[in-house]
Amino acid sequence: MVRKSSEGADSQDRDKSRRIGALVSLWPFLKPYRALLAAALLALVLTAMVSLMLPLAVRRVVDNFGTEDGAILDYYFGAALIIAGLLALGTGLRYLLVTRLGERVVADIRKALFDRVVGMSPSYFERIMTGEVLSRITTDTTLILSVIGSSISIALRNLLILVGGLILMLFTSLKLTGMVLLLVPLVIVPILVLGRRLRVLSRENQDWIAASSGNASEALLSVQTVQAFTHEAASREQFSDITERSYVAAYRRVNTRALMTIIVIFLVFTGIVGVLWMGANAVREGTMTPGMLIQFVIYSVMVAGAVAALSEIWGELQRAAGATERLVELLGAEDPVQDPKHPKPLPSPARGAIRFEDVSFRYPSRPETLALDGFDLDIVPGETVALVGPSGAGKTTIIQLIQRFYDPDAGQILFDGVPLHEMRRDDFRRAIALVPQDPIIFAASARENIRFGRRDASDAEVEAAARAAAAHEFITALPEGYDTYVGERGVMLSGGQKQRIAIARAILRDAPLLLLDEATSALDAESERAVQKAVEAMARSRTTIIVAHRLATVKQADRIIVMDQGRIVAMGTHESLVSEDGLYARLARLQFTGTEVAA
Image: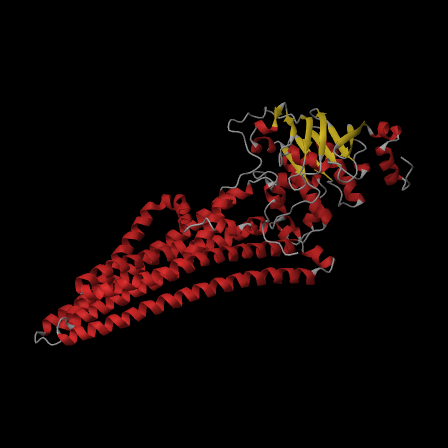
């Protein structure tokens, strides 16, 4: 099923309330560059003024064609040449300043967007696709660049020419200007009527572009799964469908804009022909000089061109207004997980004590299902605790709540006696090292992937961590050793190699609280034994929470917590739990003997 983003689903409702004034939201990004903006506006005003002076020089030249004094003619031709030179210089300067301003502002917007979304909790990304966020950072900001670096400048310049040209037309011929002004309402009406339609279509087009980006991102990031299940044809069909919808929306937008342009330009130039006919009769009757007529015609053409350009640019401004709203929505999005205004510090040094007090939790995307139900657990510093149980029991949820990726619906979680929600997330996360079940490997070298655990670590510390994680041998066998580029998402590495790099990263972090979420699930038996020894050595001096399905990896834990349906159903050592003949004993028999006994 083709799905637009949740943001785009109600786009039509929002389009009704959107106005071109949404561009005012860009002011906070323009404000730091007021001097550059003022210089660009000054260059813009000067070029507009120089443009309006050119017809005056042309009039003088035409009216003096018959003069016997060639010096006067030379003077006016020279003045026209100087004006043209000033116009060229001012236009180039305006382009330089405005383009530089646009690039600078858009770079700041992109940084602000990334700064915002990179700190958002996982619950936020349950409601919006990553591809849509990327579309806003790239496609929408490109529209903003077009507007700041070009469209607004051209619009203001044409607006000045429109106003200045009309004023000078009045001084040239009041009668002819009156006729021109009668045409203005005829031009404005289609701009307003079709512009409103264009605004709706522009937003719809942008929403489908974002949906297309999200769909492509999801498929490409999971390309191996797509190919493994021979889902290529279905993925192509789905992406093609979304892209076609985007094209149809763009086609309707382009048609509307083209129709508006045709109507406006036809009306404007029809008026010019009429004005030229009246002016030619005035020259023939002697009430107007040829130079005055040419001056008026040039001003009329300039005014008409300005109106046509403004109608053209109006569509761009409408699209940019939609893009600005989308960016403002992203910048103003509320993170469900917030740092307190007056945070408490984590006790120093951190000891790694964790306590769950009657915690209940539902994932935002599954509000009908309790992931944890009245969960209570007290873990003392230095203790190794294993969480075991069937899939969906809530084990990984414990890991995510300890890192405060989500807030519980009820109860609270304490780190060294301080509730997590009363501390800054960065403060207590620095005291946590994580090895996830699906390790994330970045498009960098093996060394930099391990150093992600602690950015200031030396090369020797990185290599020591790799040795402890049984990763040193395979890393040194890579073409460039530790400096080998491992590809996007670590495509050059096997699953076990990725997991050992993730373990080395956690060892390097040297945090008082270690979280292992199926940390050895992708390792072969030999590597698992080596890593297990490293984990056991590391666990002696810190609090360790292990999530595991393979019970062989948790037999040495100080306590094993057996979970089922978000609750603790048993607790104890491996030996005591096996002797109780409960859920743990049944799981142990399944794994160690391959037989199942009646519950």
